[in-house]
Image (tube, rainbow over all chains, first blue to last red; front, side, top):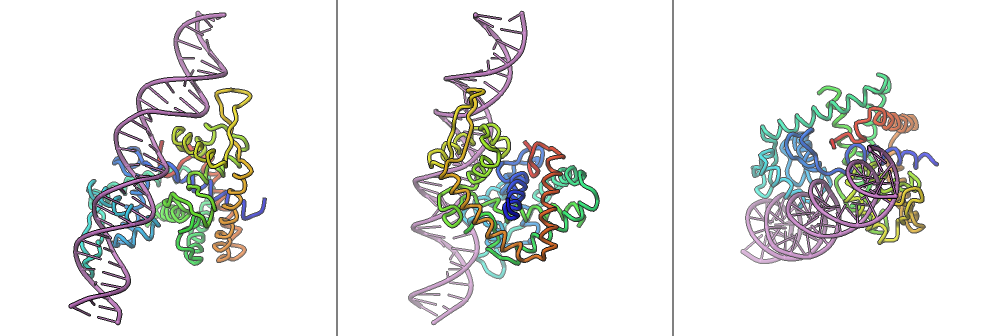
Length: 154
Length: 154
DNA sequence: AAAAGTACTTGCAATATGCAATTAAATGAC
DNA sequence: GTCATTTAATTGCATATTGCAAGTACTTTT
């Protein structure tokens, strides 16, 4: 079992545990019915600060048509607001509503709690190492630029 | 921006880049048309060595009914074989076919290549740190036992 | 001012999902 | 031993998600 295989195994298992396969969220974490994809959208809209639809769908690597419909859903739930860009009227800019911020905060707290339980299993040194490593990993992915994705192409 | 927030952010972005959201695989990585979920199933059937349906669906955290259908699909493609357990005739044991091993090997090679490109961006020391950290992380998740998942409940 | 390109939306058909109900087999109670 | 209960897996059904193709609205190029 070579090293690459081992790291692929570690990553595969980790990513799945993080929540790859169960698409639907639930009351416990969101209070609201927000799917996994939608929680990623909320996360990214907050992080990117008034991004365009295109920008977010690129960042998430999901098809713009699927994205369009997901955003429609989030808008319907009152979690996201759209406005036409003043620079280019083709472009729709996204922002979280007050309600959207509340829901995302809820998810944040839920995640913080779960992560705390996991990181509580480690020594302080290990925690720091792991956090630093994840940073290194994300930077390396960004530098390696394979279109932003790893596991699959396109 | 506190530490927990930062680590959640690192994890969220990493997991997405790993291939969270684009469900469909493509020719480049699999040759065969295998969805992301199905590639996880192949991976796990190999890893667990003749596991039952229940075992794999639990491990992956996907509903047994959905799983049943996905396995049917993989069987139809000739990648997975079922047999009745000798110990308990309710139980179906899964195994990769020769063809299934070929496809999974193909995915492995594809992943190894992409990971190589990423880890090539790091120093040897960084690589070792990151690999070790992922191991620590998976162990800590296993120890913290929150039902095997992180991002969402259920 | 026509042509080409970009941002986004909708129609549609294929696929994936989860719950409820069912079958088949094993285990437990008596 | 037999009847009730539990467990593993499958199917029906209703709903949701997906991506491609085609369309609209706007901007840039020529």
